[in-house]
Picture 1 (cartoon, one colour):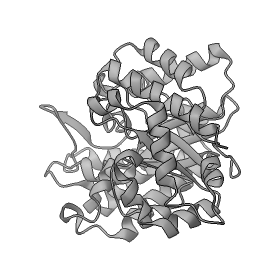
Picture 2: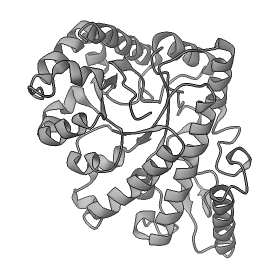
Picture 3: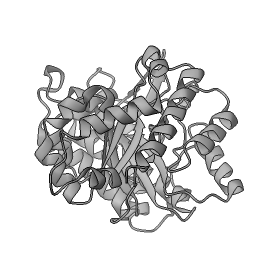
Picture 4: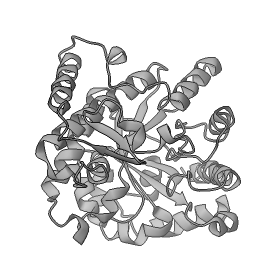
Length: 355
């Protein structure tokens, strides 16, 4: 996996607005054939980004539409003990991941399982397969306890959530690797766009790095490439240091911000790592209609000149590039989302001609 090159392949971020699972999976396999990603369908509440990965965590409760971790319940300590017992059983090889509490259930994993079934019937041959889970920083800053306090401020709960996500990642990779092609797993980290702001002033860079590295290490142990998706600007120097193989960002709207970290990008590229350029806009239906694959290719080719050097050529960057939408499509109409998929596929075809 260390030497895998995307060669300007395309993939998707994950979320789609569709209600028909069969239809959207067929669309992805047809229009995103390089590195298909299984679709998360937030129309179904169990498949919403955070909800989908709460199964198996101790203390999770839902009251009046609010999901939280209740740490003051009498049964919480026992749930915590059972969590660590289950974790150690898997890590020590006493229990298979498939038979553990760290897999997706029938509702949270319904679209994922249908995606796998389609792959089995299609006897596919892909460059890679992509999965995704919510990232630890986003889950820890979004999920709160009964006092409305984010879990990231409780060291014990930080440990629980990171270990939980590490095994969720391994379980998903195990399923995807059964098809015999490379696997990429993205950590979706929208909350990292706010890192460094007043909202997270008490959270250190060292903590963020540790959170990401622990899950990235688990992904590597499972034999997959680790990526992170951040849909806006962040402290990119921090992300370059987390051990991820792939950095994915909204290159349509934030290319200039990313380019400020030119030296870190060049070092990252020289080490053989990958950038997944989110070149297809997803935040404005008018932009989606107004752009073409050709206009987006020209935009990327123009912008990338800022990063090219004699030792890191455009061809080198292209060979180590993936192309994606700028973010997930779950909030778009089905028509707009399907156009995003088509634009992504077309962009890849054009840019591969420059290799």
